[in-house]
Image (cartoon, rainbow, N blue to C red; front, side, top):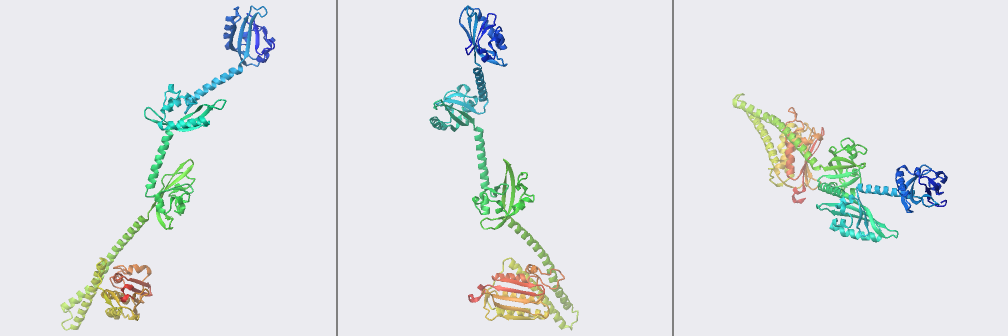
Length: 619
């Protein structure tokens, strides 16, 4: 007994150790002599004592030598712990050499603890498998299910009792079965993992999308004997991806079809997208703008976005929705032209990064319309002022000669000077005639400007001699010039060609210009009328004076019907303000231009330039 590896002991009928082998010291840490005479059950774990006692009592009084056990129990170790022992017993009470029960106790602690760990591991695995959000499976070499958790059954659409075998493949989408067979065969042959997207068709017609991941199992010889892996339900992911793709396609369709330019950029102003409308607006392909700075197209966007109107653009700040609409100036990429735009910027933040979307509208047409409306408004207001001025001037211009006509006519009619003052009455009649002619001239000017403005002017064209025009015009203003004391000098260039035009209307132009020169010149200062060949091959007729002159800002007013530079009723110079405007329109009707060069206190020169097409002989 001293050399036996197991603990061997003899227990008497009263349950005490009568002999103990030396292995007790190695196995239990207790020397044999310490156990002699002690109760055998005192070494047994309290929870195991009843079972051991029943076993020994049941066999202790039998004369048979049949082995009792084996049974397990826990024996106390000297260090304070318990050792798991596998015990067998043999009744040797009838043996005079060994009067008692011989016990063999083998230490199986390591095995028992390994079995306990295995059971715990198995329990943990089963718990994890049951609660796992993915399907877990094990198959044989041919793909038949050996083990699968409930989640695998739920994803595949199988009842739990129908998991084993090949039934799961019958639920695969027909288009996926052949692909699974081919990839499975390749994985078995190569020992490589298999990764597949599969679809399971439910009995209700629904489709479950799943990710199949399997790794081959091999035996000690490296042969593939099966596969373990997971089955992940990807249905919600696929639906989410489909929804995102649909939303992206819808967004792209809207952005591509938008009439406004839509540009996305990051916080540094780097362009990430550039829709077709932006390409058309800026004249540059999207490929040339991607990963370029937006200020290449909108140079002042930095200042624009820093003034608070579109602060969403600033990096580091809080993200906002659509910003205010602000106006800016953009540059067209192809030609560098600048044009007005409206900009609205919104910002979103995702994953710590901000993306800004700018909606840009070309407002060139709107600005043009606004300017046209402003010009039309100003023109209407100017026309209203001109009408008021016209009425004021007309009232004054008509009343003065009419008063003379009525007054002198009453004197003649009533013979207030007596019957002998015939000469005086003749003078009064002459005054009446002059006043009537003045009224007629006013009416003629009004009719002329009205006809011209209505587009009813018709030219009666013929061959015209510029020298004759100048002479006839001088004759018509000679009396006025004499009364004002303003001499008129003539400068006719040799070889001035004949013209083709309306002689009456051209003479009217010269008369208007000469009348103004006489009216606005100081007495004693001469006016000059000149005719010469123009630089471009046409003919130029000009009238110059050294009178009061016109400031540059008043020149447009001088060319406006019914307007004079001095609009007050107490102005020094009388007139309807129609002469220059009528002359300008008559010259333009001949295809020519009327130019005014003037400065206050330095006089005025008005030049009529008739085009080469009006020169006879094509000169």
